[in-house]
Amino acid sequence: MKEARLHPKALVIGSGIAGIAAAIRLAVRGFEVEVFEANSYPGGKLSEFQLQGYRFDAGPSLFTLPEQVDELFKLAGKNPEDYFSYQKLEDICHYFWEDGTRITAFADQEKFATEVEKNLGEPRTNIHKALASSAYMYDHLAPLFLHSSLHQFSTWTNREALNSYLKMGRLGIFSTMHKANSKLFSNPKLVQLFNRYATYNGSDPYQTPATLNIIPHLEFNRGAYFPKKGMHDITLSLVRLAESIGVKFHLNTKVEEIVVENKKAVGIRVNGQLIVGDLVVNNMDMVNAYKTLLKNQKQPKKLLNQPKSSSALIFYWGIKKDFPELGLHNIFFSDDYKSEFDAIFKKGTIYADPTIYINISSVLKSDDAPAGGMNWFTMINVPNNQGQDWDHLIGEARKNMLAKIHRILGVNVEPLIEVEDFLDPRTIESRTSSAQGALYGNSSNNRFAAFLRHANYSSDIKNLFFCGGSVHPGGGIPLSLLSAKIMTEFVGR
Image 1 (spheres, helix red, strand yellow):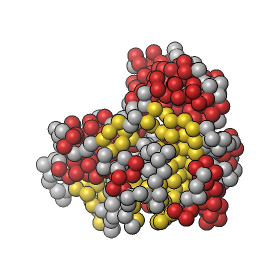
Image 2 (cartoon, rainbow, N blue to C red; image 1 turned 45 degrees about the horizontal axis):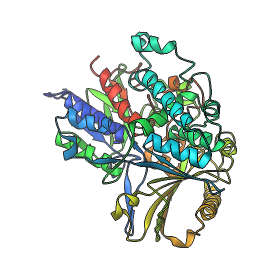
Image 3 (spheres, rainbow, N blue to C red; image 1 turned 120 degrees about the vertical axis):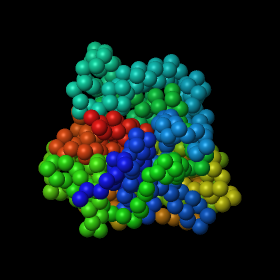
């Protein structure tokens, strides 16, 4: 006999940021919500760890659209400031090239334009034009591609969509990011700087459509931020919120199957036992979910076989020295960006001169490192896992990264490394169930990529929903949060 319940029950698989957000939204709507997480900690990629006095945010390091987090607190009738605090960055990123050129990307657009004109000889008006174009794209594309389901006919026939159809040329549909940026800027270094935004969803700027030029709008026009307690505080604060409104988290609890009867999700199987629910939300990577939890169900082969995004190789270094020229976000550019992306996406290997991203949260949160030290989250973009000899590639990449940092900073940092750990595509896959260790699910290296993501609901199985970076609208913190929002709108339809 089916147990009697006062409230409908929702079962969420995975406690990534989207899974937590989905749990909060469903609890607010009156569901009894339980979240099942295979790891011993919540957050998925948005986690942390400590090594001998150094604290590291393990995954995402950039925080934009903080209102998406604040909205969850407000939905629950809470004051966001009682749970979570953050600050707006005055300088967004520090850029370095091997010829000695250095640029600080200031949040103040006029100040950034002055910096670019002074150091690169690029007319300041070009910065204003580029960021105005980015804002234009966002205003016309975000309602369609980020805030709505692309899998509903009504999305394509509303007034905003019809208005956007007339502007497809200006929205970058028919060009690549690199071609568009080469027309906007005269200095190749500035083209490279704006091409970098393709990596925000694991793409190649020489292949991905110019629509991705909406991303600079988030940083420069909307603002980049830093959680005052570190990125992991996004996870911790939302878990506290979820628990305060009745959500139950089950850690170290691996789901074995989504149970389907008569084309309807009726629960999940854990340790051989059936847990019944009125709906199931999958926050696990879509590809691995179909291969494991839904292996007996119809497979969306076209989506499952799509090329995957890039992955990452991250070294977590505790550095026993302070570098005042470095900020929270730092980029050491490759001298041949095209060859770097060809290596990643066409050859499936790591380029010998990779672009290096260094995130140092101790710049703003001093207790993340011992006095006089810094916690370096040192990352390069790498291909997803296709069975490469990763041990060899990682060893070579480490040497090349250290040599490049030495050339640019003029300091050999290897003797300064006090503690060290690393994360590669294999461990990203094993810890987060991300297919092939891809950070953002399916690749966005063609103009139809937005349409090649799984919907936020199942069209074949009733009461089965999807959220997270591997489904619509995409990866990264803001889009993952939006996926939970879009998903919840289909519940009860």
